[in-house]
Image (tube, helix red, strand yellow):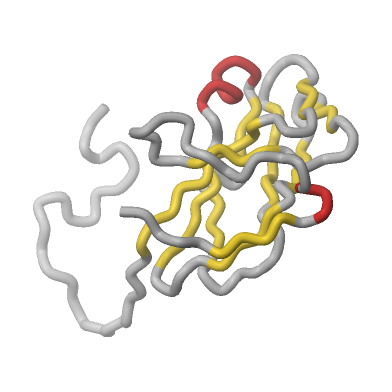
Length: 148
């Protein structure tokens, strides 16, 4: 299923490819860095990297910003608030907060694929206060309660 999505390429995003699926079976579109100068991420450093695009999601959908596994495994660079959420009513530029968990500096260059964008349907809840919740096998067992 494909959704037609309105997108604006901002001036600093001109000349860069639109987010794209790298294979026919990909769930995420790769987002590129729309920067005019290299961004150096020292170990432990964070930076918000612009993508040079803004779009209008249809109501009932969200876009999730997720790390690229290659950057995470090879360099320790990941999305700080993974997954980040872009709400359907947001119309600003998509920006990616990156953090370097690696041991050496990482240089982000213009056009580099820095994150993935996954679009997903959203269900909104309506709270119904009750006195007791239905019983379940797990009950109130929390962190680690189901074993290793």
